[in-house]
Image 1 (tube, rainbow, N blue to C red):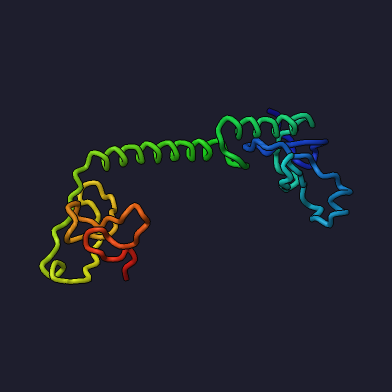
Image 2 (cartoon, rainbow, N blue to C red):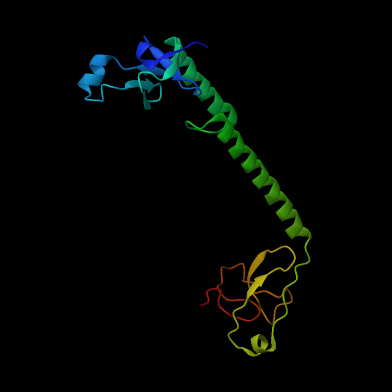
Length: 177
């Protein structure tokens, strides 16, 4: 890897720590586009434009590297399932996070399936309240069952398969304030 000042690049370059290859703008293009003439500009295969100071050290690259850069990223996207100009490390972290999230979801599902579902006991005041609206969240697995029900053997309101909005045990509505 030979570093040269950006102003001396003939055709293409990449930044020292970067992986994208840029086609250098000609001086006439910089003038025609009315860009700052004291900077060196480049355009990547995906249309992104970069600029560097003329004395910045860059890696001169052959023109064919642009096509390789594009093909490499497309191959990366296809194999990894991540689209866009993300760095390889960030893409891998996102994939790992997705895998951990799925693993956690599986463990959570297993816990909820095996759980015997316990709810906090209703207070005397809640038992006396005709329009009681207390949430039914399991103390062990955290699963949310909607509303508590004083009549249901499960401890929470259940609604008919016919799409009814009223509990089949206490007849309270599913929508409550």
